[in-house]
Length: 460
Ligand code: PFF
Image (tube, rainbow, N blue to C red):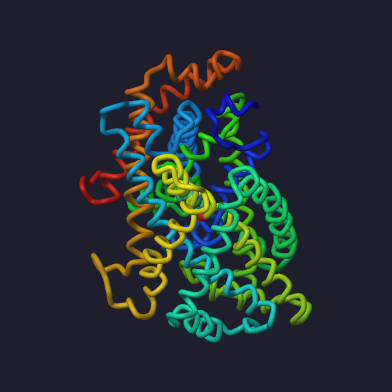
């Protein structure tokens, strides 16, 4: 594709690169840290069922909408909306997106920091214990230490910034193309181990047999929030990545591929975790600590001695580190693209400034278990507040307005032009279905879920 077509901007070079980067953004700690722990605490398969419906009827529509906004305008999250609707307030969606990117990065880099910190610990056998009380102490020592929390977060920021500086194609695309196959390979290896353990059947039935009594409106809001977080939508990440797409990219097909592959990774992560947890008699509903407290104890229970146990432990945290990297790259790119295009900064200057800003905001999340443990807003530490406010409020609200923009402000003709690539794709039925969903179904569902989940109305 010529540079002219892309309006003089760098973009993803190949179709495979588009898929790798977009899937790399979707697949992240959400699959390994959030999905299994939320499934565990919200009743297993019933939650997964609602989550799948949410990704189909809500997350996917927002993803496709964001991709077309980005690709038509070839601009960052804020300027794209500003150029589509000049002198109107729609650009605020992009501005809220940049804010969300910052807030997510603030706590996400800290969870990634724990993952990175665990890799050398797993290699050195420091996590080799079958007693969760001991692994709990190891985790507490890490998160209660202000310096360790901060330094590992800086390591994560430097790692991501270095890839971002290398560029959209040479950095993000090249890296995600290399890392994703490794991620799949590791997942398959761990699955072969977990599914051949005696507790496999119990773990699988927990994952796939629904228990509806655990479902409330808050569960539904959590599932919708997770689908946004999972697919990296509602905050301009996908507008930014869409702006790097090739003109001949089949956007609906890409969206469906990313959604299905991401779901597969989440289920494989669940299938890696729950059978092992049940085999060795640990609790499936440990919440966020499942990853850092339960899993080391679970892996230490595997047969084959310390070498095999440590090997699986290292592979597992490597998997989480790789997954986190692709997601953080997309989060980082949102403010960087804006700073480069709006303020004319070099990529290096924009990246370093963003990293410094993130180190500052992120420190409040990093210190949430130590120096700032008692600093709470609405009963939540900064870490929990950033997590709750983004997943359950900012992303769904951002997604709602993106759908309203595409379904109501843009209209059918523009949508058809974008989804058929100016008539070169023969997918009329897809366009019609998408138009109906994005105009009516997705916004109505989002409004109902948001109002109920936040307790503003009560439907039951
Ligand atoms: N999708 C990522 C995950 O599931 O871990 C998290 C994420 C990345 C959320 C990028 C939002 C975003 F813009």
